[in-house]
Image (cartoon, rainbow, N blue to C red):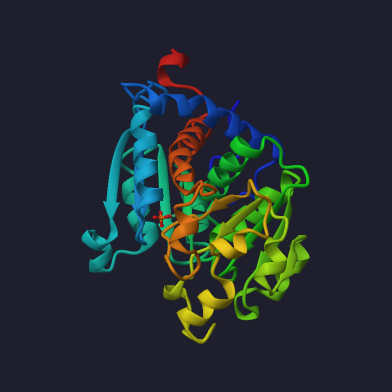
Length: 312
Ligand code: CP
């Protein structure tokens, strides 16, 4: 039981068996969140540090809740209030945190590869909570969990990822995980937001939204990441919404029981209409609920799947 690596950096590095083990473990932890006392002793005595260098609502909060529900001690590190502002470098900062006998570091950073660098130089388990445009493995896992909860099997499921593929670590993690589990993946967006190399990953590339969502079982709508763009990817938000916004009229082209997903935060009225975001097909808040269970599973399995209590 447990995962082969001490770290979780990408979905690419996980075997199909490891992904399934995480999803199955998350299923058993989901019930903990419905109890009056939402706590199990699995990580009692372990210390988890949330090291976020980029803003986050869902990932940071759900990792903190996940660790607390497993009875770990949790420290939230705020980069802007740390000695990084005095010039301390990233690896020195991490070494000092690690010297306090930390078991797990959860890290988000704007640079692709920064989390991998820390993992390579750290004895602690390092979990990637999103690095640049590279990977967001726990988002990929919670998306897989949510799809499996509703659709049961991934075989030949048509999953369409819509929008800003270029800047999306969520898209990369979704593509890796979905293809491993047997889904058919379509990506769609303006040519300026779809890297040419993606066709080699085994996805179908579309430039017209209507064609990409025709017959889809799942539509995962990505946020337009204005903070990572140079402002020249499309003429205006209004034009983007006109061509690529998922609205109720376009939704009719997909299967009637299509799942509407979004990793958040949403730009309502741009990539998704409020009617779709709040409509009966949306499972966007289920994704958030499932994120806690999936992160509990990852923390638990990376610790070897054993509590101090059980190993006595
Ligand atoms: N999905 C996601 O990563 O959301 P946050 O940026 O709020 O963590």
